[in-house]
Image (tube, one colour):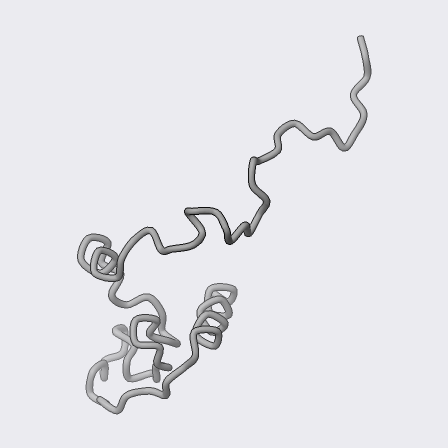
Length: 93
C-alpha cells in the first residue's frame, strides 16, 4: 500500500476564486424587488441602508421605541464605503 504525501490535492474547481469574468460573477442573481418582496429583506443593517446607500442613525433602528420619529435622511455613501460598513457590522455581530 502506497503512503499518501501531504498536502494532497483531492479536488480543483474549473475556475479560480474571484473569477470576475465568470457568468455568475458578472451580474446579481436576484433583483432588489424580489429580495424585498419574496425574502423580506427590507431592513438589513442598523448602520447603513444598502438600498439607498445612506448611513442610518439610532432613530432608524426598528428596535428603538423612537423608530421613524426622526425623519432626517442620513449622509450618502459610496458603494465601497457602504460595503465596508456592512462587513464591519457583520464582523461585530
